[in-house]
Image (tube, rainbow, N blue to C red; front, side, top):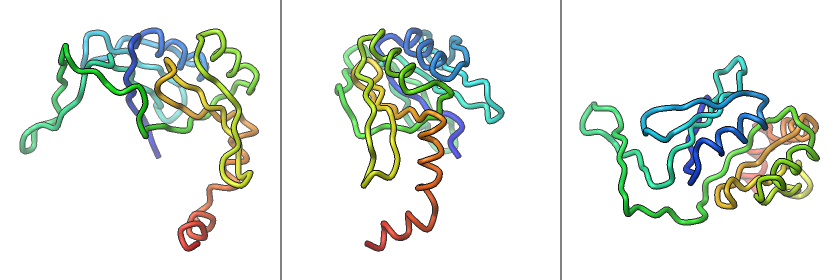
Length: 156
């Protein structure tokens, strides 16, 4: 189970506020960077998405030290990456897509696999893809995402 994740953004406060809206949660400032924010789902698992300034990185500590937050003025992240995650929302597909349209961010309903389940690709700042699943989409996903199905896919 994933409890929290972090993503980069050019405007962390705004991105955290939009994510909190999609979750029906709230946004708040967050360390380790001065301009970092978090979107808090307000669920019973403590789910949050940390939103860091896109020019900041986290590096490993030495030995048994914890990770180190590091900022570099010249660091420029690529527009796209292989990262994404699927996130539950209580909102309807139309509401999620409308929020994307309001922000000027790509938000489109998509089918995954051979019609296995549906998601809404929601492109934060048109750069980082998050898949939002409405309650109906969550039911589809849970019906598909069983250990047996994943084992069968791996064997094929």
